[in-house]
Image 1 (tube, one colour):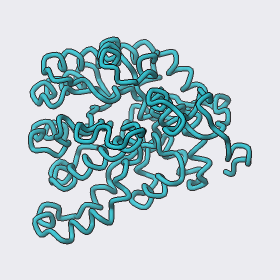
Image 2 (cartoon, helix red, strand yellow; image 1 turned 90 degrees about the horizontal axis):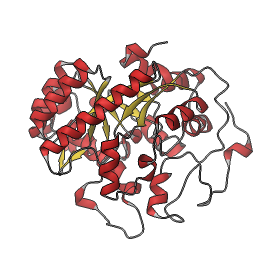
Image 3 (tube, one colour; image 1 turned 60 degrees about the horizontal axis):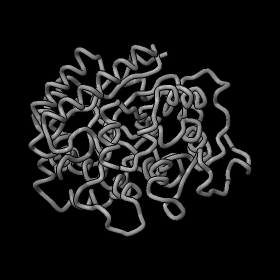
Image 4 (cartoon, helix red, strand yellow; image 1 turned 90 degrees about the vertical axis):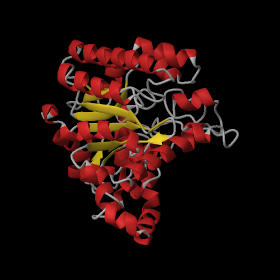
Length: 358
């Protein structure tokens, strides 16, 4: 499918409020508000029967809003989120079902008891949203890591009682990435359940305000995703727990661009060759990756050099971007056949979440 020249090019400014804001012309808050909005004149998808499954769609419970507002994280779109705004965007973008999840910084702010309570509030709020809008939503339930015991309890409650579609984790917790041995009991339980684990990047404490004038999400979110992928692969976590179905945000961040380095590290280390008998590429080819902030050629060329379209799922990052914008971007790349697009926007997610099959 070839888009018109009018749809291939637009000029953007800070006043283009419904779409993208760039770090060079906008404040940090404005940039966060439009970080992944599509830089396209999106065609109208509202006239087609909704079929897309959005695997990267944020909700904000009252407790989560209170936390991020009080901490002045600058995430205004999350503070202003509403169910109706989600439904409106889904209808405009041809999305049948969105899988809800909490965005960074997650629910842990230093106190285990408070994190447990906030995780429960977020997950029950998500479950109520699902119940109130039959068929329109699912949920990746947040867990209160680094609290392992609390996370095990929340996994059981979320999957068994709330019937969540999977679990949401941030990419790091107090500098520990998801392959850290401290999290082994959690991985054992998720593997036993053959659970879906959706990950969302965090702004790592190691790397705040490194480059003046460039907001942390521009570089750090993609980089933290790469760090946790490397952790999961090179610690042997993916090898030891093969039944966890991982979904990584933003096309895997910078990980696809690091594949040559990953391969070189593996080739140079006998201990890694013993730990990873199938090599790192084997695991990275089995992971799933979403299209949030990755619906243009550059990230998708990198990603499709690592995985087949069968491992890519549709994700928008709403409320930071629109479903119609992401769908338009995927078509503008001219990289995918109609069959591939259908798989990315619906079939691949339905394959791992059978309840969503039309």
